[in-house]
Amino acid sequence: AMGRRPVVGGNWKCNPDSVSKLDDLIKNINACDTSRCDVYVCPSTLHVPYVVPKIKNKALVTPQDCNPKGCGAFTGSMAVAQMKDLKMKQVMIGHSERRGEFGIFKMDDDATLAAKLKCVLDAGMSCVYCIGEPKEVREKGLSATLALMDVQLKQVYSMLDPAKVVLAYEPVWAIGTGLTATPEDAQATHKGIRDLIAKNASPAVAAAIRIQYGGSANAKNAPELSAQPDIDGFLVGGASLKPEFVDIVKAIS
Ligand code: PEP
Image 1 (cartoon, rainbow, N blue to C red):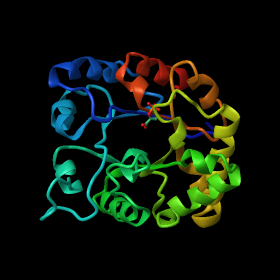
Image 2 (cartoon, rainbow, N blue to C red):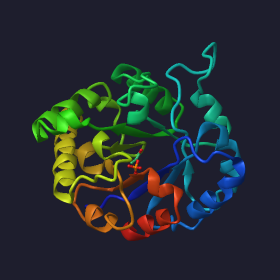
Image 3 (cartoon, protein in one colour):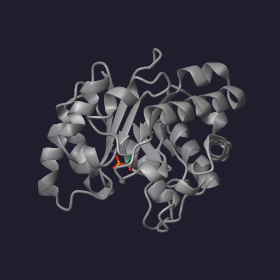
């Protein structure tokens, strides 16, 4: 919206359960028209090297996390240098399932995420940076939600280069629940986030940076949500495991 190039990402999370099921999912990605919309896909770590050479359009294979340090004695983690070497150009960080809103994998606090973002940008890669509020905060209203977004963004405002960073605003209560923010609520939050960026980074950064909506986005709700002036595309979980993903890209490009 508003002159920014739309961007749609598919987060496959920890799916599918076998390599043999990947080909159909990869077909969905290759069926997306990437001429008017940026597309990316986040396969599970183990599947990334399988997926990379099979992507035939401009979709970016985007790992779901990286570590905040680099290579070294960090068992179980992945470094951006390794991703770059495997021809990846983008990393997603800060997904709510890694921030720990669901009580598992409580690994990513805001300071750690800022360190991760610095690693990604220092490597010359781009980043999908996820933010979003849990239900208890949403229930307190828009200003409580934006106060939390300010906390989640505070340590990265200075790193929000619109050419390198896409923000994914994902209300936690809408992720995987079938509940979607109404277009009006999502727009109000996106606008509020943009205003925070204008104040704490700059008006130029706020005008140029893309903010995706995430949370039960599907082919049906995509047209109305993406018509909102401050919504620049979607981060899609559940629907990215279906052919419907192609229709979401189509709906906004
Ligand atoms: C997500 O986890 O990033 C997401 C938006 O999931 P879903 O579309 O399934 O709500």
